Image 1 (cartoon, rainbow, N blue to C red):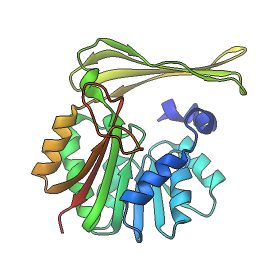
Image 2: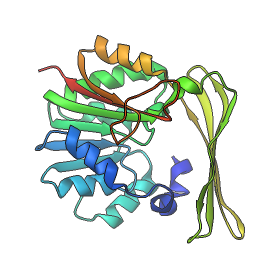
Image 3: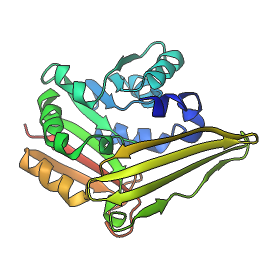
Length: 238
């Protein structure tokens, strides 16, 4: 996935490690056991969770991201794997699985149910499943959505993002990172958005128990009309 390889070296500047995210994961994942980070990026949360006494495995489909994770956290465990590769992991081998950073919408809608079946299979009974996406409930009636620019004054960088050609189950995600001399990289990748209610119903039908639905990692309640993010916590039935 060259789209992400192109800015793997800049990822930490654009999406820095946040203590609030770790605190949320620490609160909602089981206190012990093996955890899986799907779409681990540069591996910061895997490393932080290792420090809590858990054992984290980070997987990412992008070789640039895995390369950065291994460089930054040589003590960690990282594999070049995508969401389709979860089927290769042993059954009941994780006490917790999380997929944050709007990674899940990279998966086509037709593959979502099968992927969640695999999540249930690899989780221990009662294990936690955490998934975070953009709140698409408030976006799917728009043709275009422009995110506010992220300005990094110290690095003299500007990161721009937009959703274009938005329709049910599909949109184009455009990014651009620019410095004083112009564009450092630009990219486009397809995403497959889902309404929050769709996620709720599908998880229920697959036997997951809801443990919380939040607007962000502070634990604020989710509002489909107002929240910018959507963070689900589920448990696998015992």
